[in-house]
Length: 303
Image 1: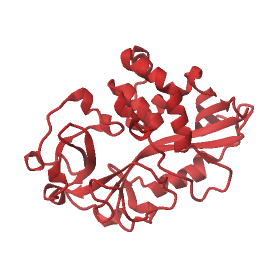
Image 2: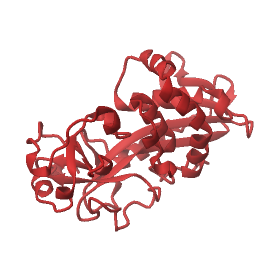
Image 3: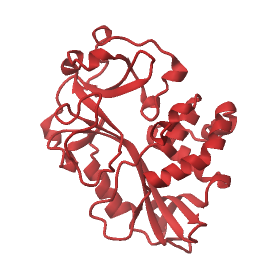
Image 4: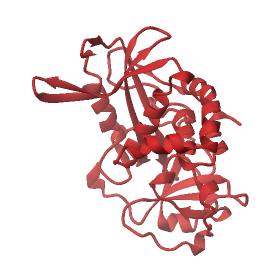
């Protein structure tokens, strides 16, 4: 199986999501408006890391207690933090890669004032360099014209991919060192999924029009639709669907839950005004499509 869908090999929810963190494709290929040297950890990098970690993932899938105990230390279960903790678990597992974690959440002070924080300070034992890693998981809905990064908005707030990239370029990577360690390499980890309108992507195919130049070629894709468009869409009617919570925004967990699936016409109305995520499955209960469904068009004032 291609590493693109490697997380489907694992049963336990946390292990499946950990495999997703490693094996899923990058969202960006470069960071716009950043002039200093920067390495975007790309799909080739993550393919190597995932393949090296397969023995541990298989072991954890049989006995997940170590991973469960690690995650239980952390009280914040928001998706961004969960992604951060899963990456931290892997980084601390020195038997499977050549990185040494020097500091997680390295706080930068100016006197007694906090002026920033590094997600991970890492020593690369292959190159001997000290690296600063920034990591993020993002899910954005695109509103034409899709070549405008400010028109890719988060599902529940006014965050946009444009604002996030600007923050990374101007704020997160501005530091040159930490407590005597000179930062010799900056590395970016951005994963997630982009949700395209029907004008640019059918439910069962990849997007057919170019959007942002900085997107990685194989980034994960899905759709967003208005509820009225969804219930009448012929491709949606080929699948059975389930409304999912944030624990399935990374890797699909139907294998664990075995929850009932419904035809489009049998789905209950949307529970809220904000976009809600649905996953569509085929007759073998294999995921075939994802859609954020919206009850109304987004307010143009947001742009």
